[in-house]
Length: 450
Image 1 (cartoon, rainbow, N blue to C red):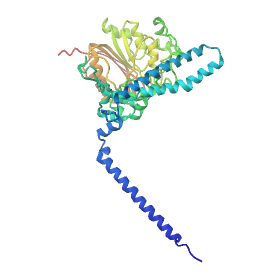
Image 2 (image 1 turned 30 degrees about the vertical axis):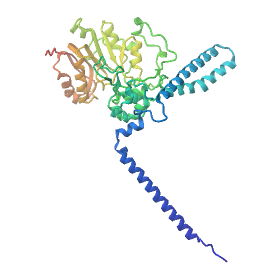
Image 3 (image 1 turned 120 degrees about the vertical axis):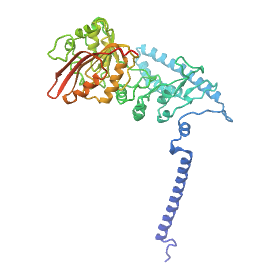
Image 4 (image 1 turned 90 degrees about the horizontal axis):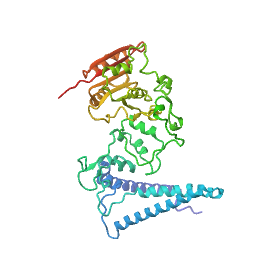
């Protein structure tokens, strides 16, 4: 009986040899590709490579390619899409008035299966960046190093310097407009790109929580966006000014979806408790009354800033005294900003990280309560206080209201407040607990004439 001319052990050795040869080929090809990438500068983060991948560089008319025809054709398609969408929308509105059930079904089908996909396709086409064949200055083709850190198109468009279309220096004395974001935005790249990932012209996501997270972590100021902010579907007209100051706003005017509770401001939404603040005597020495403070500079306090956590009660009290107060208010677990606005007051949505958006020597008063307490780092506090000193006018008042800290830290914080050599009008220390104390002070900024 004959045996196989190719024994099993020889077949196995042959297969192993083929696998070894194929493996060597794969390794050789991989090393070759890696060498080419390295030679091109890809692994050294070469800016030209990034621009090649993510941007449209200068496009020249090559053989067989008509850039102007492409540009005109895209414009033509966009115009037709605009016309068709308007026609569809008009048809759907007419169907909405109909009492015919079948037409209502067709209306829903058109909205869900035709208009929404059509709209997203329209928006996507508008976002395509084509070079302008007429050569009009288009700064989105020029990029800065920071731009290559981001992939989302909207954030890249936002931070690209915008050149003046007329090619001249603008009213601000520059050739470009630079939109700013904080350097910490690069450290929060994923969150910022999520924040800027939307359809242009469509509704923004209900992402105020994400926006505030970016702000408090130093990505501040946030970029502007080209989407429409949502409001409550049941929004009601606010109360008139003679009622709104001391009346709890209608719940329907606030979107409560992401709120966590009023943990940072106990009683802030109870108007009967708020109504007694700064106007009734207390057993605590650190409690100053508004009338006593205003008597220090009668008629001189007209405008000011309240830095704290709350619903704007200090500003409401000062309005009754014909003083205009702007209130800083992040939404720290509760709708503080909405509440302040619905009371007819001015909320300034700003974090402790950011320089105050006021010019030098402009505020008559700065009041702070409930925010800057013994948790704050001394170096951060130094930067904040110097900025307050910058915007406070000569003769202006700094009202430190019930600042509390541990007894052992009191000397450090007292130095922080006293280093500016303000005139002391009021100064009081009261016990808060066994280990903590309250400090209240009313200080006047000196002239410091040059």
